[in-house]
Image (cartoon, rainbow, N blue to C red; front, side, top):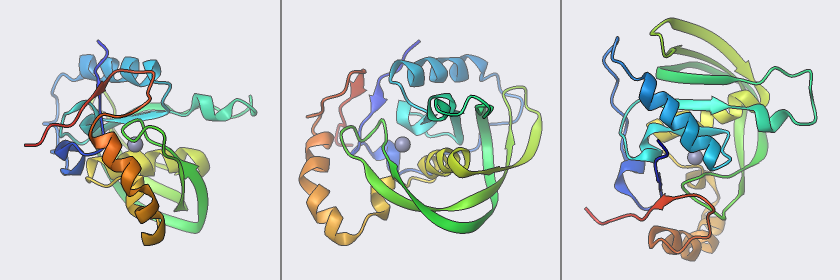
Length: 185
Ligand code: ZN
């Protein structure tokens, strides 16, 4: 099942997600999230982006490694994740977000992360990631904390983006995937 993607302006994107009870059957939800993400050509999707305020996100870094066949893509669901460490030099990368179509901005993030999470079979992992894989995880992790990448841009840039963001929150977007227009609650 493909979910419509919640747009900037919907309050669910600003909520902290709730932990999922260990052992819950969420395989179908995760499979639907992968289907939704791929239909929108995304490399990551967090549960709040389909209207569910849960600590869950998925990542598929494959489209980011097109120039490097040696690199093994990260295709993974992260359930109840917790970033334990962030380290290394901050580097800038132009990010985008399926909930904020048409806007791309440079965001600085640290290079390395160590993260604890459950996979879809409820096995617990502690793993380290760097570079673009860390970047996608950091962006998705922000979603379950109620943070969006546009929060990091300078106040000058924020002023420039204000009109565009207001349009997105009214559903005036040009996206080639299904979206859910925010409703005031
Ligand atoms: Zn996003």
